[in-house]
Length: 104
Image (cartoon, rainbow, N blue to C red; front, top):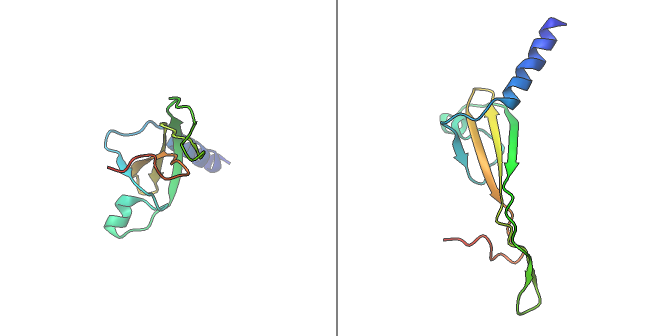
């Protein structure tokens, strides 16, 4: 009973622990720890906290009558792998017409 409780508490602590200053940002995340992939190791990944910015950008119709929704909000999710690597991903919802976010 005590062992199970300790394991549950350890998992809760993992999920609510604040992000570390040495986080790795991932782009187009594939579900695997990016550090472990570079090292050629396997690990499991736990989803931590997430947050979304709260900016508003009104949808609009272009000259062809197509509805555009340019959501400027970043959706950030933090992760931790079973080997202790912390990383995060920021996603932006693209416009269905492919013109947002602008690729530079």
